[in-house]
Amino acid sequence: MIANDAWYAAAYWTACNLQVNREHLGIEGVTMHRSYDDLRRREVAREPLRVATAAGAREVEVYQGDLRLLSTVLPPGIDLTAIDLFEKADAEKADRIVRAWRARVGGAIFIP
Image (cartoon, rainbow, N blue to C red):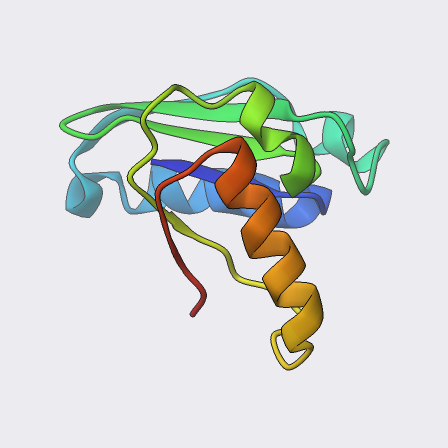
């Protein structure tokens, strides 16, 4: 599983949530690659920056960066992507994002 958010606090707290819920998620440990202070110096990131990794029955990576550039760090063969957009009501914008993601990454897309 790969989680990503352009906003530093969201990426950081996603990593913290993995640590807190590791037993329920089948994760043995979480390695933080960036501190909160490191991340807050760059509140919104463009280039994907690895924030944390988790290993165990499930492997998880957390990034801070622009969704449009995330494909540069993804492994091949992504089956399913959940994209939680702020402006879901803007169907034209959502469609552009979905088309761009399919072109770069492929796989099925779910917008909650």
